[in-house]
Length: 152
Image (cartoon, rainbow, N blue to C red):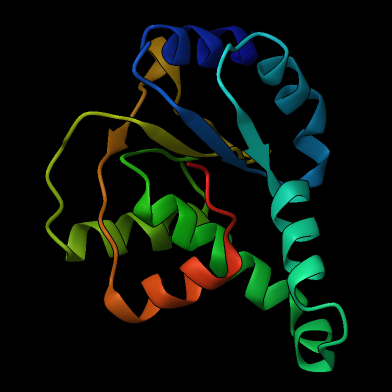
């Protein structure tokens, strides 16, 4: 089962402090299986969505553009993560991978993981786990600091 492979990947990394999982709603059973088996805090889109709505409760522009803003923030979280596991065949994941590659980011120790799951093809565990590391651009960093809750 794919959830078991993901859990094994995370459990083999005791240095993890937190995980953000970016995934479509139809993958909720898989996310729930992972959340119940890993001993570190796991945030998902619901957490980000609730935080965004609480920070800007009466912002019509955000309501009108919520999907684009939400997707951009999730991509930014994944591009900033120390480790990023991607879904093969996903254009969303490809955008993140290209940004990380353009920054010439080198591998470093993982402390948080942005993990994308797609209902299409998956490259995980013994079937070809792939990860890279990331940093952040200044303009997006400012936006992300405003929207994302502080974890420490």
